Length: 357
Image 1 (tube, one colour):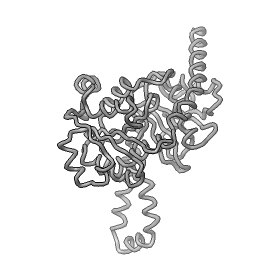
Image 2: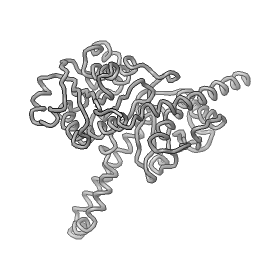
Image 3: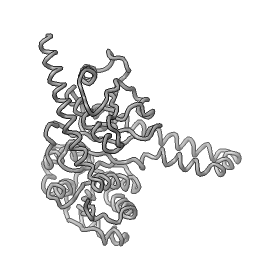
Image 4: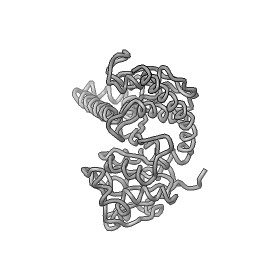
C-alpha cells in the first residue's frame, strides 16, 4: 500500500476549468491528507488560484502547459494538436511514466478516451474501454457500464462489458457472484436490437464461473437495484445516466418549492430537517460523480464536465480509493478469469451460428 497517493489532474479540463478543479482538489485533500497532486495546466492561471488555497499549494506541483483540449473538439482533432503537450495528455502520461497513480479529468470524454487508449494501451483481450459508474439504488449501489466511452456495440463487446462490470462489482461490493443484466426496452427475449438479443443468448447459454446472468432489465430496474451490474452500450448508457441525474435535480427543486409554499410546510421541514438532508445527499448527483475507465493499463477517472467543486472532489475520491485499496489490480485479476469465459462463449456461439446458416 503506497504511503502517498499521487493524483494527476487535467487542471484545464471541464466546463469551468481550474476555477472548479482546484477547489475540488482542496476539498478532497481535507478528506485524504495523504494525497499529492500533479497539476497540469497554464501556470499563469493556476498560481493565482493556488495562492488562495495554501493547503493545496503545499501538496501540489504545477507542470506548465498552455495547450488545453476544448470540450467541443473531436477526438481526432484533440490528438492532432494535443498529443505530447496538452494538459490532458500530460496528465495521462504521468500515469504511464509512474509519476502518478491515477489521472482525473473533467475534460472532453471522447478526447480523454482516445488519448488514454493511445497512451496507456488496452488490457489484453479488451478492444475498447468502457466508463463504469456507481449508480445509487434502493438496495445500495450497482455498477452501470458503458455510460459514454464509445457509441455502439456488437454482441462480443457487450459480453466483454459483462466481464468487466462483474469484476468491478465483485471487488467493490465483495460479492462472490454478482448478477448481470442487459439494459433493453423489455424483458422478453425477442425484444431489442439484434446485438443485444445475441449478447443475451450468449450470456444465457454460456458457462460463467464468476457471475450470474439475470436477463434483460429495463430502465426503471436500474434504480431498483434488480442486478449488481447493468450492461449497455455507451450511447444508451449516457442518456440513461443524464436522464436520472436530471430527474433527481428536478425532484429536488420540486421539494424545495413545496417546502417554501406555506407556513405549515416550513414548520414541517424544520421538524424533518435531518431526514430531508439525508434525502438530499442521497439524490445529489454530485455526490456520486466520477466514472472509471475500465480496460486500460492505468487508472483514469472521468468527471462530469459540468461538475462543481464538490462533484469534482467526489471524482478525486473515487480515484483515491482505486489506488489506496489497489482496486485496479484486483479488478484486473478478476477480469482476466471472466474474459476467458466470455471470449470462449462468444466464439462458441458464433461458430454455432455459422454452422446453422
